[in-house]
Figure (tube, rainbow, N blue to C red):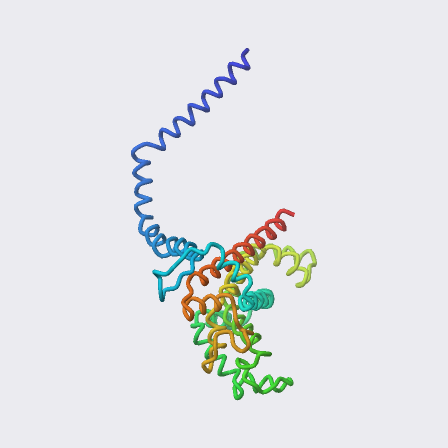
Length: 323
């Protein structure tokens, strides 16, 4: 009987405690604080609604329409026809292939190089601050400017083209040759983005305590063992961030391929669609042919791809972390 009485009392006290907390939460002071918080957030919510959420919703709606800004009054509902046409469009399929190839080449290479550069810059070398700044400069430089400079460097008389001929490469303008244009874009993207990911890895390396490395040296671990057994595992969160951002940035790449492919007045994606990316295809449909319904459908397919790859990355790293 005593046990039951104590249990009931405990239940009542917990209920009473919850009631008291709820009552305190809805006090005038709490309501004022909540109101003040929403008031301060209101400008951001309003701006986000106007410039982010409304355009997304509007794009989703017109992706199911035959809609052109040249004649918006003639828009008509076509359902999933735009999506079906996209998946049957050989040009769009080729743009997907090119983008996936960029993804498969660029992300692993820039991740490995960024990690190596960060490890070197984190060591005790002279002029570390200078080199950190130099590596970061390409990332904050205009992508259009970078693309234009690279086009000149890889022209027939360009410095890089002449250098590559020493290794048996043809003396051609890389941007105009279907064999080399794609790899020119790969080089430009890696060179542009690698500084940012190096900085991310540097911040991750500097968060690792020196005591861990000293303990490893006392245990007789060499530099290779320290890197693979200590540094790499502790950098998993940073690596996930680098891969996550690298995948999104590569899938959304536009400026560099556009500059390279349109040099000399050529069509976007030239030569022979070897440099055509998904975003460039979207841009062409929207602002060359003004087919906004078709372009919006392409935008949401790109969004689904990015969202799916992000989930896969998260699931993989989460599984590795648990194991």
